[in-house]
Image 1 (cartoon, rainbow, N blue to C red):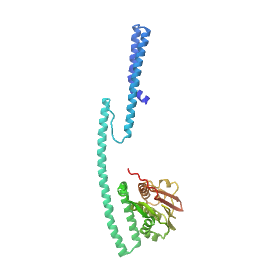
Image 2: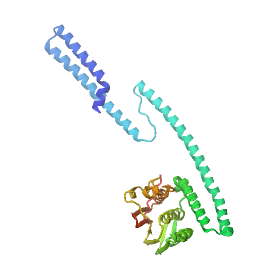
Image 3: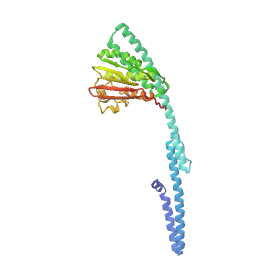
Image 4: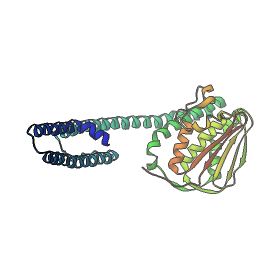
Length: 321
């Protein structure tokens, strides 16, 4: 900080030095007594030193106060000392006002967009439900019904993605049966099991867990959907250790180098790049939802042997911003 201060005030101190040398020469030409010359020079040096200490202290305190203000999210200005500071503050205030106006405008546009997509997702569910009834009653085409169920899953994913930022307004914690929660999701996706001839190894020991049923069901649905998507044969095993639910598949697995990034938004990894339809949003949503619910999610996987996802419902610390 001293170096920066000297850079700013070097002209002033050079001017002081020039005046002191000038005084010294004048006194020398006037043949003033040597003791008097020394006394005058000492007085000049003391005055300069006192000024330096006072001015540097003010500079240092002012700088610290600016650092303190910088950490504050609200815009506060220090007391004006010079005209240029007033000009800078007025300019910054104008920029702040412009930024606030842009933020308000963008927030309005964002809210309008979210309203539109939310309405669209809800509206598209009606023809999906109608088409499902038509297929079940008139055509009875299992393959068409499977594809329709995939569309419904993607629509639900879009809806939960839209709601994610405001999840805390939609939470309702209650005790619920883990067996019921898991079995309902298996039932919803039973057609996928039949289509791929994948067996269910169900070893859930029923307990009551405290969670939000709707959001936790969505996470289980996403994990099960991934397991079915990347398992071509074999089985999917469901078991629990107290409040920890494990979903283990015998699918293609995930590369070890990809595991630390599987919860990043848009990350599809090596297997996802082979599957051009992968969005990289499913696990991202699961992680964010469980973070907001106060639960934990983790993944272990081995290429060619399968993947195990652990959903831990025991953690209940929730931080609401």
